Image 1 (tube, rainbow, N blue to C red):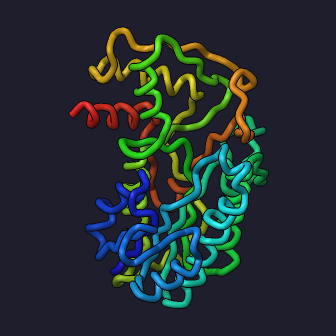
Image 2: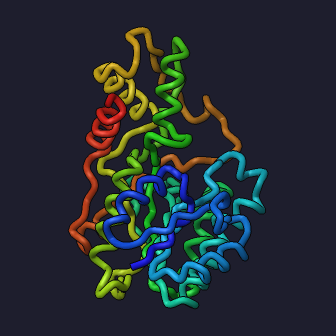
Amino acid sequence: MKILLIGRQGQVAYELRRTLACLGEVVALDRQTSIRADLADLQSLRDAVNQIQPELIVNAGAYTAVDKAEQDTELAFRVNGEAPGVLAEAARAVDAGLIHYSTDYVFPGDADTAYVETDVVGPLSVYGKSKLAGEEAIRQVGVPHLILRTAWVYGRRGQNFLLTMLRLMRERESLRVVADQYGAPTWSRMIAEATALLVARTTYEGRFEPAESGGTYHLTCGGRTTWHGFAAKIRELGLAQGLLPETCAKLEAIPTSGYPTPAHRPAFSVLSNEKLLDEFELALPDWEDGLALCLEEMRG
């Protein structure tokens, strides 16, 4: 099976280049590769799919600058909203399937229990609205697909909360971190490993055919915490692994109102993974276990 991976250098895509390699030929593209696949240039996506002729497209690219998107609305909607629909149309034209990643930010954050896939959406930010538009565009095309909603993604590469916290804890004496937004931190490698397993379980005679099991799934680590709780665990494990000095920054818990941002974040965006478990017998570990494994690897 030939797999076209979009977003070559992203933190999830980087991990996917390894996990998908055992399932077929992976062609990883972005806007800097010789065959361009730029999510902001919709024609480049059509051209890339026509040239590669994949059996499966995995779109791991996105516009992820949540606050910047409030001013950069047109680009955010082109990359997150229009491009997934173009990829779906291109996939249908070459008889391929599509896997696409979405976000917890499609929900308004006013729940008191974990969101399930059928709960009413209501994004608060341009970023969330653009990601929801991408989901809807894929569904409208009707191509065989999996849409995987994940959340609070971190890893060893790129720009993410883990790497930011490790850097700031080394540089500062104290850090103020929001303690009233809830979610489930999820290691990019675990997303990639789960994706490879999903591909393997929905591929028959070299073809991606999710059939009745296709559609939208939540894919996050288990449990829940706040940004402050996430930072505190990074500090605890970072000290234990020797990744942080004993003099690293102390943490202060603050409300969202104490750290205003251009984009509104959902106060509660914990996602239920029960559908994924029921359909595929697949569940990621608790977020604390995932973080511990990631930091152990960072220690080397």
